[in-house]
Image 1 (cartoon, rainbow, N blue to C red):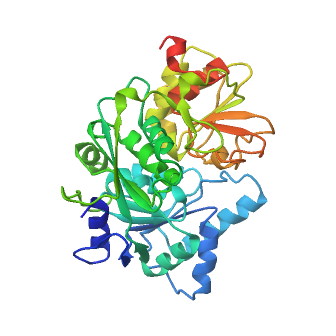
Image 2 (cartoon, rainbow, N blue to C red):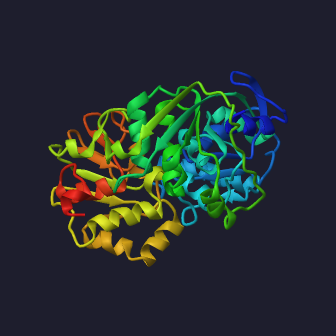
Image 3 (cartoon, helix red, strand yellow):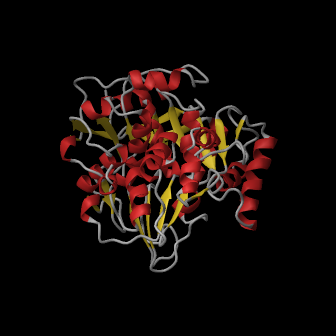
Length: 419
């Protein structure tokens, strides 16, 4: 079996599962946010559930429209707070303690290798970076799981992606996954487990792995996953709040497809409007002027991402025609970035720094685009109207390209700044 099949077999109390099989599995954690949880809570009440299956395994994280941007957002968040209080949930994260959900849960050691995790958010696939099976579900499935601790799945086929060689300078997990989506398309891994491996992955830091698995959904994947190793162990050993288990893929595992990439041929990559698969090398897009740059989100809002952007922009100024918004993904990241002087670097460059929030990624707030405006962001989606007006455009890139773009006022690379 593949690592994905082994985890699902264990969750379903079975010795063996095969792709296409329908299973009923126990879940390690159920996640929902301020957009999806109110729907799940409504359905939870409709089915007559008297209580939750485990008050320590349901995470409610208001992160999309917080701090509450308007009355409707405030009402949504109030639903979460009251439900968490009623059921004595230990994993409710209020503003001041919260962070962008898919950065917060790994940071806090609440999602771990070998877990079977569901979340009412499509980017729940992020946690596959730790060697877990993790996928997004609808709010009604989340409601049923909150009551029963179980969810049904069709065991996905697996695709293997092998990355050979070493990464070029200013190239990271974001470029690898954008290059991959550009190769296979937004439905190239439809309902499949995308298993990332190879020499480049073996040396890829955890933040880069989280970025790659985060965007598996943008290729249609059911999940993204990386077999855990020493990098995984180092990351989780000081964080884990409970026992965990490392799984591996058998050498004779079957894959629906295997793709191989030469990393020496992959440079900083940008996804152009209006699909994550519409990718081109950043160096070919220097004629594209930009109005807004966003560094943050569950994809690239971690401390290492901020360090990368700060290294490029330090001692420089944001172009006068650009507004740059930097959003640390959690309170801990915010605090550490402040201690390292990263926030001062951004502010000195005349960028603005926000409290943790999903904000502009989904067109929520903290950076909405007007008609005709273009943004380059470290976020994960660039669909029509994703960050504001349907007549605006969003380009996706890594933090270093984002910072260089902010300085140049057009899509650019750190090399153009002599870095």
